[in-house]
Length: 132
Image (tube, rainbow, N blue to C red; front, side, top):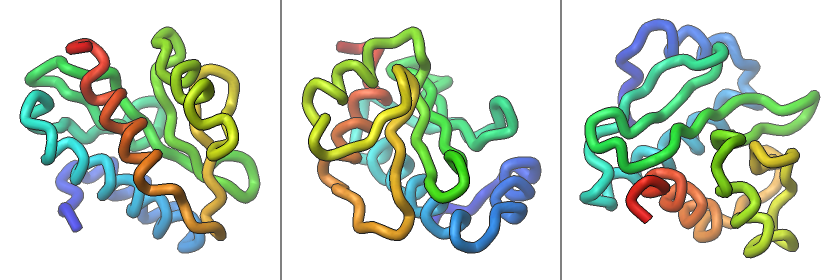
């Protein structure tokens, strides 16, 4: 698992209850693993945006930022910039696979197995959004 370097990000992860911390760290790792496989993306910058862990392609500027956080009382979500067409595209492809929140997030149940291939595809699309 990639080490959290930014102290403010580490603090946010530490503050999550264990039931949410673990799945959010899985999402974080999936974002970093996906970025590492895409040579166009380069290094990701991990920071906080709206007090949520955020992942941006600051150097290559190839993608749109991704954020992760709790969602409601029982779920977690991966958030995408609401002024992109990303969630609209994901909904068209995966309406029977994912739960969505408006034009901004894929909502995941931490108690259920996630469709990793589809989730990876969505992360890839966000990380390369400006290069498509």
